[in-house]
Image 1 (cartoon, rainbow, N blue to C red):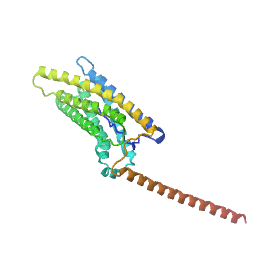
Image 2: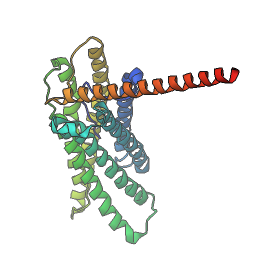
Image 3: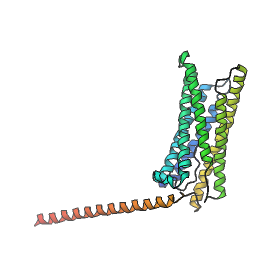
Length: 293
């Protein structure tokens, strides 16, 4: 489980009057998701209730998919969905767009994989189909872990030019634990794959995978807490007039130029509408006067 941690000044999580509240709601949703992941993974320990753990993970995955889609929307809306601007600022494509997109895809793969596991655990499949579905479920989980790790790598390679060291430190307290956690998740998913021939080795690998996943989930929870602190820190930077990261390579200037052109066009259309409305009103008055005569 991972999410975008961006310090772009152009991010747009909601209406101007509620943009900080919407961004904070995004961070709280991510924190709840990480907490459910930790609870769910713990239930995979031997002797615990595995179906309950799977249900916790499914709810967490829905939350994380929504969070990443919201992150993607916030970045795209921040530059008015003007996709050609990514040619001027490659980081927009490689991080602000690619990271949440890759992470949302990983979340969807995890969701489908754990739905398969839930069906297997509840005994809703025929014995003939169990081996086939199990194989696909493990493959989906491994692929999803790889997508999350890729998203974490995207997230960790952000370039800073204007932000101070305090904001950069807060960024690293989110991105570095995410990178470590998703690496552990990938290792755990590979270890849990039922391809071990000797039963003692298979059992030891499965238990090791669960403990690795618990450590990874703990790191995710830590990153979720630090992400809320990071969002509050960026809010303070905005209020005190501090600098966050603008678009680069002339993209910020191009965006402002396009917005000015759009504003001028709207003003002209409004003026034309006002003139037309005034002419119509004048014509009605003249007609009424003629009728009175």
